[in-house]
Image (cartoon, rainbow, N blue to C red; front, side, top):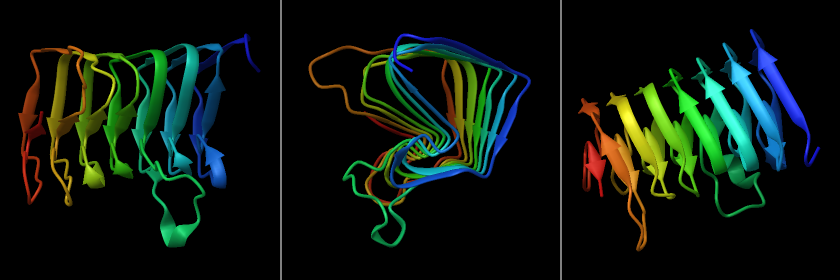
Length: 193
């Protein structure tokens, strides 16, 4: 509900689907304040934010594991053109810390896709896949990333196997990134900036 506050701790959310119109296979937050701590988001699917969708409000994800979530337009099931953020689709004031994105898939942003600046610290993106760009993360919001690892992600179509940056006219801050073992056949196997 818009304007509400919610907290999830020590919760497992598994095997949910929000298609063909939906966003946020496991959780959907719209203009709310939410805190997730020690949460596992596993095997969910939707058209945007296969695992979680945060838009507006304030979202904080601490020690959250996003595993095997999917945001792809399988067999034309989705009614939206943007099918992004396999683990998390983030718009607004979103903070991710000490978390793991692994084995998630999407058209763009296999692990995570952003539209506004978000803050990500002490987090690992490992083994995520995007069919278009940003296998690990598609940063469309000029985000602040510190002590983040991108490894073994793939962006097979366009580029940015580990990380793609689509920051038009704004600035991003990346500090102490580890980017290794990612792949993309056309450009930017590790990063496309």
